[in-house]
Length: 494
Ligand SMILES: Nc1ncnc2c1ncn2[C@@H]1O[C@H](COP(=O)(O)OP(=O)(O)OP(=O)(O)O)[C@@H](O)[C@H]1O
Ligand SMILES: [Mg+2]
Image (cartoon, rainbow, N blue to C red; front, side):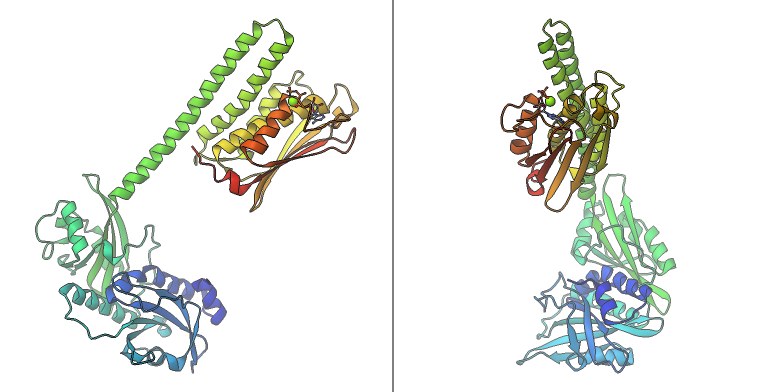
């Protein structure tokens, strides 16, 4: 579906500021739909007058009543004669009320309201609802409708939207969260049932209507600010009893003077409690990664001590290799322990991994360079761990077997790690310009523990594929790993 901005640009040449003004309007209009028990539709004329058609820029349904429109009409064009009240309001810049036949013997009630910008009507806001014989209205319904009428008149006078609408930090509360109607003295004239319950929860047990706004436990700061700024004001109040209330105050204006305010109130205590839990859960996860890393280091030193006591070279080497493999896993946990999101990209673990492999080299002067480029985007931590072991193995092989001591290849010896991703997969490629695989090499048979680990981890654990390219002696080796996104991202993170 096209956005409001796209539709406005396609069908007219509205200036940027005006487009943002209309966007602001649609950010807060859910409240108006709820107050009027109607669908709200924003119509934009497609040409200079005489206007012969309107495009529907945006639509919001009420949560307090049933919608007239099940289908999504945004983006559709309407002939001017099929929207008589909208056309009328566009021409005379005044609210028009009436009933419009919609086929059969059905008709709908329409209130067309001019949306003003620099003294001119630029769009029409239509409140549309089923026209039925109306049952006697409750006090609540009457109050909502009268508040809506006050907003409609503010539109007509160019006083709403407020112009410098504050950017909403919070989800815009809807009428169902709780509404208080307050007069300019700060006295509550009306409270919706949910607002009354909220104030009860906050500890105010006296009648709400007639009380002063600040006595009920809310802060009068937003009222004062909204009255003086003549614009909506949002505030989040953290009370001593650790309850959190978000209030949105909409001043009701008449010819530049505040005549009262509609205040939406929402209890966000539960939400904030969950936020805090999430933060502490993140901290716990980081702490666990830290401990896992420490435990792995302990295991490594145990193996190292044991290795030193062994006489057999082969056994010593085997233990040293295990120490290296455990080290690769520890690197991932260490990186995760300091990450903010609890997830890291593979690029972030590559640097310490390369350091680890270099540290393990028998002669540190071996001038083979290791270069890493690209990245994989965030990966689940267990995928990162598995992949870290695989890539360490491949780097180790390139250094161990690709470049013979004092050989020609060693001069410009280079290992490249290329990381990339697209919509379907994450790709890792490790290539070197060393001697290449020995003749008769067959990845399916007769490989050592290193490549067996690589194959098992890629194919079985990560359900990916491994491709080896070696174009003959002296031309290096290229290992290509492809991990399908649908497999690796379905794994549950810690
Ligand atoms: N980058 C490379 N360049 C040249 N030969 C390679 C390369 N990678 C692997 N090989 C060859 O593949 C063989 C198998 O490698 P693999 O990692 O499985 O075992 P390994 O390195 O010999 O022993 P380890 O179990 O200690 O890793 C190596 O012995 C080597 O001959
Ligand atoms: Mg190996």
